[in-house]
Length: 290
Ligand SMILES: [Fe+2]
Image (cartoon, rainbow, N blue to C red; front, top):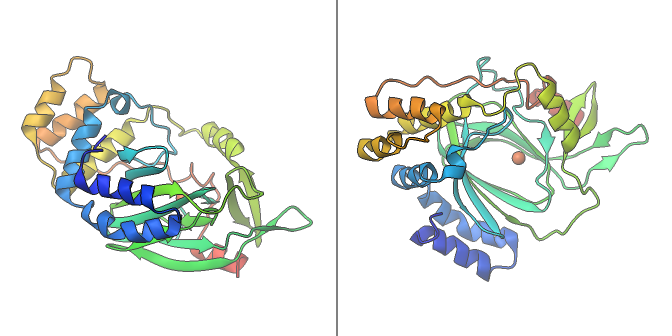
């Protein structure tokens, strides 16, 4: 998808030329800035709508609503959409603390105010009682127009957004090979200690939630809401998509709003699924990891 786009081919070229993943991410920054425009986003949205796999995707409650831009064996480019929760509590984590194993991640906030985030050193030590220690390396508000690079194996946590926020994310395999922690773990502070839940167990627990939904229509609403919010308009294209006889019902419903211009409400996602009801505040993490 979009391989032939000049900016995407520049990123692919840089990724082929540069061995060092952090240098690759630094050198890609100026390109990322150019990928946050309405024109390019519109192109990506339309390319996604022409992809049957995307239209038929079953979204899980814990998935971040997203659009795929480009992916190969080395890199992955996506748009992520974050919506304010009903509570509007921006002091609360929206995900547990996690790292992305061997992948380096750049995120560029191209729409909305952004979110608070905390990052940690790669080294996670284990205590004799089975709890963990992490040291905070960065504690900041990832604001509009900022690009942040998260190194492979570095745990991070992000907090709720106050306004609809969209990021462009670039992943690539980092320099550090497999560390001793092979599985992606999720960590959370509890009574002054850091505990861990493995990824597989996290998914089992999340699926137990009453509000857990597969094939969530909310994700489709969220994407269409965001496209309307950012000012996307191409009625002739959307009408063409709507004519397809096998278009899934949810897409049919929400794409019709884009044509009619009727206002799409920002859906509320369950705030507790991704944090397994463990209300985690900025100060909880600061107090536990200081
Ligand atoms: Fe993450």
